Image 1: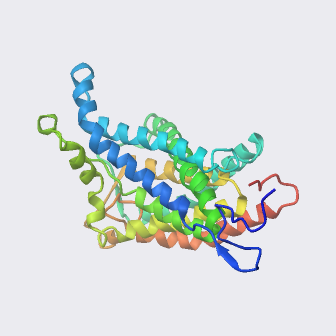
Image 2: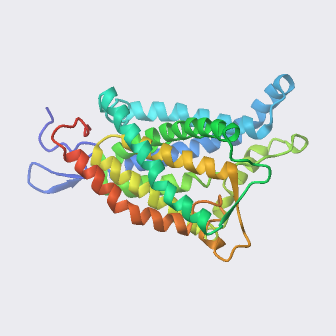
Image 3: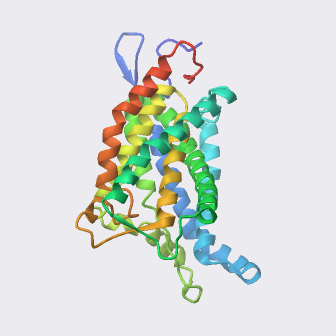
Length: 326
């Protein structure tokens, strides 16, 4: 039982024994998660070269692969430690509060919904000839079957990792401190920005002690052109907002994982079978970032957003469901 007047670390404000409002530490969780990203970058800067120099003579590894794996490992270890310290490591805080059967059902419904909602915008891209079939690609069973498998596996892997991190632990921590609205907004910013951490390669003959810093600069080079990538950023931010609202409505990340996996599946399939046509008069509708997200997908996301939110609001309010659990 909490003592009178003591402000919980996750509260925005509380009233003290004299009735006055006492403010707690806002945005603490968000700051810790930002620090976690900085630690990951620092690990790359400091450890990438020594690790590569140690492992390359034996395993013949590329420097950028060693650096990226070190960053991921540092991020994973930091995430586990931070989640435990901030009481975000239990199933409910990570977004897995539903019973397994209900969780898988909601994930499956989300995946089907995600794929179905993305197909019309892909059909519009095709109808407008915004993308051309890749040279040498034939849309037959031998080509489509592996693509479907790869797309599904990639979609599920990406969705589980990103949703657990962003709309699982991070969302829960921010919502406890600052409310669901701020959690939706801040996690959407992180979600959009994280997609711009790109790949960068340094030839083995050019690797030196400073290559860790060069690798980080390469990872972040897309941030140097905010105007040129505004369409992609706004589109990804809108997607993040939609997923955040669904997370808030349902109280778990099952639907978020399903929707996210369905969207990644479609994007993977489209990118593996076609390329954008930069000379098309309407080519500006697809971003230079990846040739898929952009103004067209942004408009579509805004258009379907209300319907998706209404759908999950009704599911969360359904008397039979074990749908909502937080």
